[in-house]
Length: 438
Ligand SMILES: Cc1ncc(COP(=O)(O)O)c(C=O)c1O
Image (tube, rainbow, N blue to C red; front, side, top):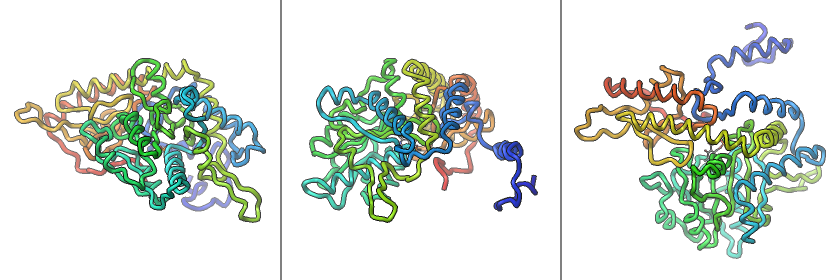
């Protein structure tokens, strides 16, 4: 193999396809077993049949470029269809019925880019307002996604982080106090990544609209599961564009939409606001360059796969997957809540949650369980992988439909490992947290 695949150097002679693919199979040996339901972040799985259609749709569009939909009108159509379907799931009909807008939006490459775009749009809206805001800030809870920091950094918008309440939700009074004349955007999450709780969106949106500023709901995580958990009666909170004062929202098709990686949707209550997002120039020698998002050339595969999975699953398919994820999350949460010394952090609203050792109570018969030791022991025992978060120390669980088949096994391992650690008091030497890598 060494001769055929020299490290970090283009081989002098190409290898045949089977040899290349076999080598990739070897390289994957140390990757985590997400297909077996062992990974609780990063990947979403709705089963082999869904993976199959994603692959077939991506293959069909592996070479096309969504930069110019006059050359590939099918990509223009699919993007429009995905945006319209998503708008329908996220309250656009109510907006039309209320006469408070005409929802429009765009596809982006993922949650991060949707948040970048929403922030840039808010900045540009502030600049263009009657009293131009030159040093804009956005107000968000400490639970808001890290991508908002990236947006703040890229677009020179101050990020005003406000500590969450004891329930890990945005603290309304503290958020209100952080808003000033330079605030362009108030942010809420539905749900938040770290603890899976839905912020009080109607109240946050009211805060924003009373001051005449924008409110973005980060439903990157919830956008393709909360509507179905709502239909099933599991979630009754209001969090989407149907809430007055919500001016934009993001939802990731590549998370609970079960699409391939590289596709998210950002929607605006009005077309006027949406029009601030695209970039257009002819200030060069190559002709008109119009682009709705960060990239120029855009891969068509994720768009095709995203369109395919929406139509393959339909409403009833998503309802089934939402129920599977809900059931799996309940099984796993139950084992944590029953294990002496362990706790779920806060009261998560959907299928994302964080858990770990409970603070030791005076006189408790159970020793304190070290959260990161729990993660290490679960990895050793069953190959279970949870991101480590802090503060407070916790293990992150994004539970999806693919976990339904393994939830009972994990619950049994949690029970066993918790008992072991309560007895041994073992602690993890490595205290590093993980989410993304450089
Ligand atoms: C609430 C929330 N917002 C934004 C993101 C960022 O999404 P992406 O990783 O697709 O960029 C995530 C990712 O998990 C998320 O949970």
